[in-house]
Length: 468
Image 1 (tube, rainbow, N blue to C red):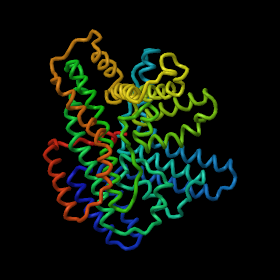
Image 2 (cartoon, rainbow, N blue to C red):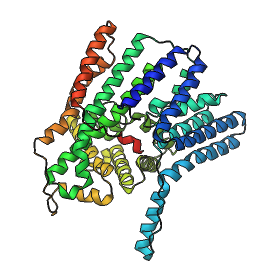
Image 3 (cartoon, rainbow, N blue to C red):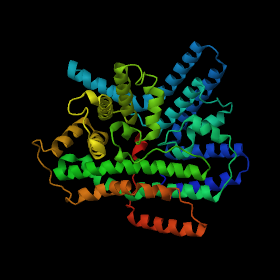
Image 4 (cartoon, rainbow, N blue to C red):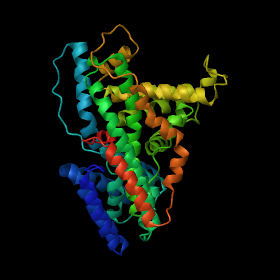
C-alpha cells in the first residue's frame, strides 16, 4: 500500500476519523496498532509474524533488563536479545547473499559446482523495524528510556505505520514519551501535517516517479544506450534517490503529525553538503545517527586514537552499506564512503589536500562529485554493471549503444535538485506556514494538488527504500 495509492487515502481517512473519535489514549493506541498491522498485512500478511517476533524479543529483553542488577548479566541479556533480533534479518536478507558468495569463491578456488542458492522473499521494511527493536533494547539497557510494562506500547513503537516500512528510524527516547501525552485534534496541527504530506507527495509522485522513467530503462540494459544517455541516467538517479526517499520521509512525518505524533527529520538538503561528514549529517539522518550512536561510538569512535577511528569508521560505513542491501555493490558503496570519511579526517596530512583554502564552493563540488559517482554502484544491479557503466561513461574503449537521450536532458534531470536547493529557505517557511482560514488553505492545497496530478506519470513506482 503506497502512500501515493488511492487505497492509502481510503485507509488513512478511516484511520484518522476513528482515531480522533476515540476519547481515551489507550483505546487510540490499540486502534493504531491494529491499523498498523493491517497496513503491513496489505504487503504480505505472512510477515506480520516477524514484527510480532521482533516486538516479543524487545519486550521480554526489556523486562529482564529491568530485573537484572548485575552488569555482567545485563550485558549477556543485551548480547542475546540483539542477536535474536539480527537472526531474522540475516536469514531473510543476507542468507542468499552468503550462499552466492561462498559458491562463487569455491568455484574460482576449487572449481566446485555451484551451490543451490535459497530463494528467500525479502519482507518489506525488515531493516527498519529490526533497527527500532534493537534501539529499544539498547536504550533500556543503557537507562536512556524506561521499559514499558505494557507490551502493546512496545508493539506500537515498532509497528507505527507511517514509518514502518521505510523510516525514519525513530528512537524509543523520542517516541515512547509521546504515548503518555494526551492528544487533542487541532486545526493547526492538521494543516501542518497535511502541508508536509503534500510536499512529500510532490517529491515522490511528481518528481521521483518521472525521473524513474529516465533511469530504469538505462540501468536495466546499459549496453544498449549511448555514453551521453548513461550520464543522463546517472544524474537522473542522483536526483531520483533524493526525491524518492525524502518524499517518503516527509509523507511519513506528515501522516504522523495529523495523528498527533512527531517523527524526526530525515533530510536536510544533503546536496549542499560542504564535505562528506556534512553530507552524512544531512542524508538519511535517522540512520546516520543510529549507526553513530549504536555502532560507531561503541566501537571506539574518534576519541581512542587514529587506528581505532579508522577501524570504527570503516566498519560502520561498510555495515551501513550492507544494511542497504545484500550485494557487493553495497559493500563497495559503504567501503568508499568510509574511505572518504577517513580521508576527510586526516586531510591535513594528505598532499594536495592539507592546508589548502578550498572554500565553500570547492568543498560542495568535491563532495557532490564523490556522492554522485557512488550512486552508480548503489543503483546498478551488479559489480559488472557498475564497472561497465563507469568505463563507458568515461569512454574507455567500449562500443556505444544505439539508444540515446538528447543533450538537453542533462539539464532537465538536474533541474529539480537545483530548484530544491535554491528554494530551500522558502520551502522551509512554507512547510511551517499557518494559513489564516481553512478555506484559504483548501484553495491553495487544491491548486497545488491539481498541478501535481498533471505531472504524475501513469504508473507510480514503489519507493526505492522499500527494498531495504
